[in-house]
Image (tube, rainbow, N blue to C red; front, side, top):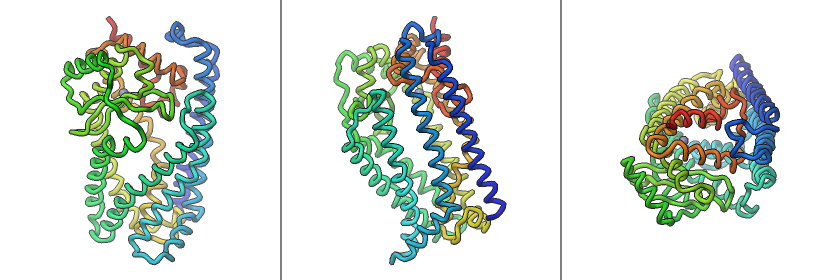
Length: 414
Ligand SMILES: [Zn+2]
């Protein structure tokens, strides 16, 4: 224990109190507006649906509260509670090189966290999503998904961690620059292979069939000067009835993906407007900006880690009794999120700016009215609350609240 311990604890509990306070505000805002559909939506969303959205949001708030508390307990158990020291000791007895012991330590932390979070995930799927009629997955598929995700995580993180630990040991003071090059290259590779290899492990993707819709959407793509490797329908309905659309990959692997649930719920003009919104993200280079931002943040993060791992107080303050590279990396990965809670509103504001830009683009290239009616249906069918607390929303909703977004779109109507 030292001064840094107190700073760390202050950040952890300050962050926890802030998050719980925001959750409380959100719960109050939803509960207080439960018995009246906001005027903008009164014609399109029946009171019964609105109340279902309120109950669903409240159930998720309870789960989120449990999640936060659990996260703090886990964090303290790993750090000040001596969990990392214990795992480190276990790996010291394994007859492999220091590098692989380090990889083992980091993978144990990741694996244990995933395993311990399993009950909360199961609760979300089989209690909350089930109760509100969204769940379509079975226990068998859920367990297979979890196992597949765990194996995928091992397959992806093992080579990455091994190369970073190798660089830390072999390249001296400049290791973090090399590590950044590896990390950035790795991220690019992942986003390139994600639509081609990873996503198909979990879902089926079939080319969009409906000829009339396809023609309409292709016209839009042409109008917007967009080239993609095709439009695909994903069988999202296998797991959940929530609907969505997204873009993935880049360069030659770039593709447009619609959840089958989205296509079932919306009319052709609404689907076109939703696609135009996604194209807006592309036209404004939001994905690229986000990637550049992440690359900058990871460069700064690695430079910070390089400095921290040379400070004895960093290890001692977080309860570590050894000062290996792997230990530094584990402490850094575990402790950093406690300090970043406080900057989330800035990132959220940036993300909202992008959403407004994409909405404006959709209004220009397609139709604001169609996007509004499509959005209302999506909010209704996903049981998203229409009455969030503004402060909670400023922290957590990268997409502006329904009413704000629709007001912005309405201003684009002639
Ligand atoms: Zn968007």
